[in-house]
Image (cartoon, rainbow, N blue to C red; front, side, top):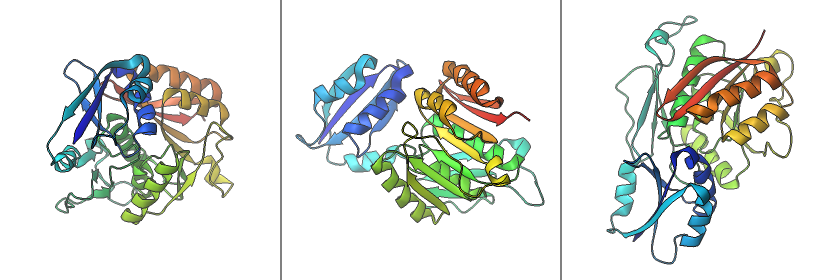
Length: 300
């Protein structure tokens, strides 16, 4: 078995990941490097993994190094050990009775081979198969969006929600578990749509998954009209160019928008774009390592 690794500069890791998934749709391993770089690795027998020129072209100017290593035949077991359950807790200040009920205090995202942990009340268990779609809960940008979802669910009534660039469907599934309804996940990639639908079914979540390209037509609210449109939440864990495009071409302005996929230095650019185009202000900013996520709300 061969492990083919691509090491890239961290500020372009998200862009490179999107490119690599086009030529390695069965998934990649992501490992932070000791020198601050990010390493993406694919596994397979000789002749079945992507070629070096294709990987180098996909990494582009972000490329630091490409390496090839022969590994033992237990690579599948090692890959499974890499994907561990992730626990996202709501801030302690929100862990109280809200609106006459005890809110969800945490979200536990696990791969299907990990057993559920039913020992703690208020923890919602979400099963995500780390296959062809981005968003297993392991990446910092996904974790930040999940924490913002917990905050948002504890602070307001939960209405319609659109998850733009749903990937594996984890954010849409989490939103449905937190009480948002109806929930629709959108993605332009066919593999992501298929993977999200599988994960939705596995979690028995009330989520509709649709194929949609925000670069092709404006984002419209979930059908229903009236106050439900004005109370819609949009979650967008996307690359910055797509977030900027979203700020310009939405057919409506959501009440709240959670934006992930940002490097810390990109957060102000995205916040400024939504303020100028949509009249939305920052309610909260979360950071983890080099990553950031924004909670934006429509100005009154």
